[in-house]
Length: 135
Image 1 (cartoon, rainbow, N blue to C red):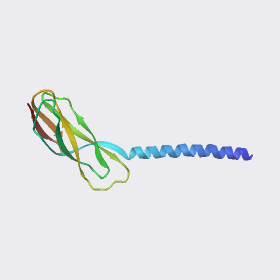
Image 2: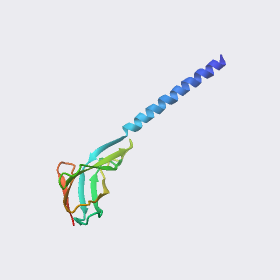
Image 3: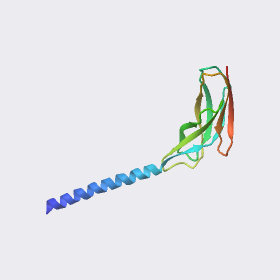
Image 4: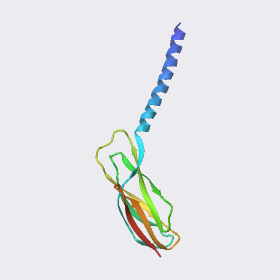
């Protein structure tokens, strides 16, 4: 009888551990999400050379203190025009309620000379257009 009680305790303990670990992972998933952020400003050089990396400083807003840069979402070039969005990631369930402005570096490089229009998506619609002339 004592062996049966110990076995039953072990089985229920194991099931409880599995249940708790599943509940915790679901909570963690709810506290991590991504969204497209709004770009506030773009600064950097407007002139460059073929195969030279041009660094642009991109400022964007996030909704709370957990928001960080995740990646750039880019369309392919249509002619010499490209649309660029910033994807933000929010990690954590407890975040400050401020709405900070973050800064990230965007690198542009091409092997063809010409005039390129990089269209950075703003938060309230429209674009910030940064024109780069490659010699």
